[in-house]
Length: 625
Image (cartoon, rainbow, N blue to C red; front, top):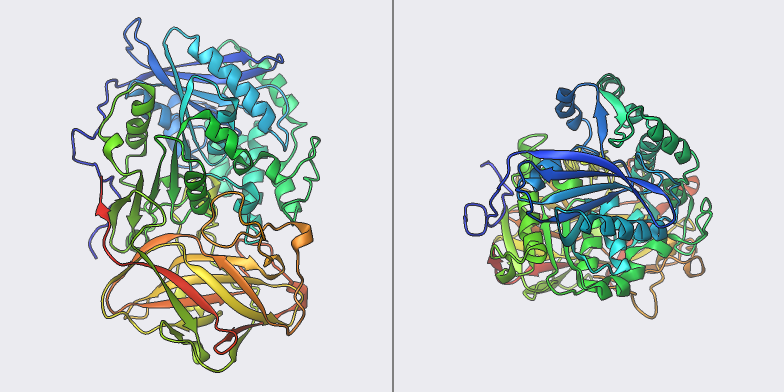
C-alpha cells in the first residue's frame, strides 16, 4: 500500500502559498477590563522584529478552556504539547510568522480571567469579546481588522461573537465545532455521554488550576504535575495573587457538561443554569440571522470522522451564505492533527496530517483582513477529500450536482440489493447486545478531548459479528460515494424504545471491513417536524421536543428516517457495500431501554421495504483549486 497524504491542493504552487515573514514571536499578557468591570486575561503574540509603525491584522481566539500554561522550565513546553494541545502557543508561533497578531482570550470564569462561567454563557461572551476587540483595534500595532477562530468550544464562541456586529470583525474560521448544540451532543436523540463527561472533567481541572488532572492516564498526570506550574498569570501579576483571586471565583462556575448529559429533549430547561434556557438558547443555529447580518465571511473547517461536527459545519455553511464563505472537509478527526483516512490509520497508528492548516487559514484571512489574494478568491468555495482515492476535490455547491441517490434494499438472509426490493414481507431479528461498541477512538472517541488521537474504527469484521448485517454484491467498477446517506427503516421492537445505530461499510475482497460512515436515531424521537428544519439539513428534521416523543408499541411496525454523517469514499472494484445495525454503543452513548433487553426487527420487502439511499457520483468533480 502506497503512503497516503492529505497535503493541501495548493501545495507546491508558490503563487498560492502565503510567505512567512518572521521567524520568532514576542508574548505579552494583560488584563482587559470589560464594560461591567470584569478583568479578562489575554495573551498577545506579535511577530518578533515587527517594524515600528507597521500595523497588522489580528486573529482572536476566545477560549472557554485556558489561554496558556506556565511551565517549570521553558523546555518542558514541547513535552506537554504531546499530552494536550489545549493552551499551547503552537498556533501563535505559526500565525505570527505570516505577520499577524494573535490574541488569546480567557473568557470570563476561565484561565486567569475573573468572573463566573455560566451554562448560558453566550451573552457574556459576546459582550466581553466586543470589549476586547475595542481594546485590540486601539493598540498601535493593529490595522483595525480582526478575525476569529478556534477549535471546538472556541470555534462555537467565534460564531457567537459575530452577533455583536462589531465593524472590525471581518471574518471567522470556526474549526471542528458545533452549530446546533443539541443536535451535536444528542446524536439522533441518543446522548453522546462519554465524550461530554470526558471534556467536562478536563474543563473542571482547567477552571480550578489543577492542570495535571487534565490527562486521563495516571502517568501523563504525573508528568504534567512535574512539568507544569499551572495557569499563566498576566505580566503585572508578579506574585500570582490576581490569578489566585480569579481561580477562586471559578469555584462558582456552572457545569455545562452536566446540563448537557442531564437533559433528554431539546426543549428541556438546563437544570443547573441560573439563567434558565435550553441548549437552543445559545446554539449558533438559533442566531443564524444575526450571524448572517454581521456580514462576516465564514470558513468552516471539518473532518469526515469528527463526531457530529461534520454535519454541523455543513449546516453552518449552507445556512449562512455570507459573501466570501468557504468550507474545507478533510480526512480528519477532531482538531485535524492526524490523517484519519482508513488508508492512513491502517498503515500506522498515528499519521500526522500533511495539511498546513495555518497556511490555509492565512490564505482566507489575508483576503479579508489585508486585501491580499493568494488565488483563493478564484477557487471554488468547497474543498473536500475523497478517502480511498486519497485526493482533494472542489465544488461550487453542496450536495454535489453530480449526485445520484441509489436505493439499496434490505432483504432476507442479510442481503442488500440495488435492484427491486423483495416482493413479500419479511424481517430480520436482532437481540440488542449492550456490550457492542465502536471502541474509544471512533467518531465519538477520545480524539474529541483535545485531538491527541486519530479517529479510527478497528476490526469491523469482528465487531460486525455481534450486529445485524446486510451486504450487497461486489462492484464491477470503482464507485465514488460523496454526500449524505439516507436511511429509511421499517422496524419493530419488543420494547417501548430503542436505539437504531447504522454503520455503512466497505468490504474488501479479502474480507477486511472498513467503516466509512455511521449515524442513528432513537425510535421514540422518530417524529419529523411538520414545518421542516429551521436551518439547512440533509435529511428529515427531528425536533426532539418532549411533546414529539412517540414510545414504541411492542410489535408495532414504524418507519424511522434519518441521515448518516456525510462522507466521501471510493469503493474499489471488487469491494462491496455493507450495512451493520446495532442497538447500542457501550463506548460512547447512553444506552436506550437496556432494562427491557429489547429484540429489534428490521422489516424488508413488500409493504415494509427498508432501504438506504447512497449518494454516488456520476462524473468526477474537479480536483484541487
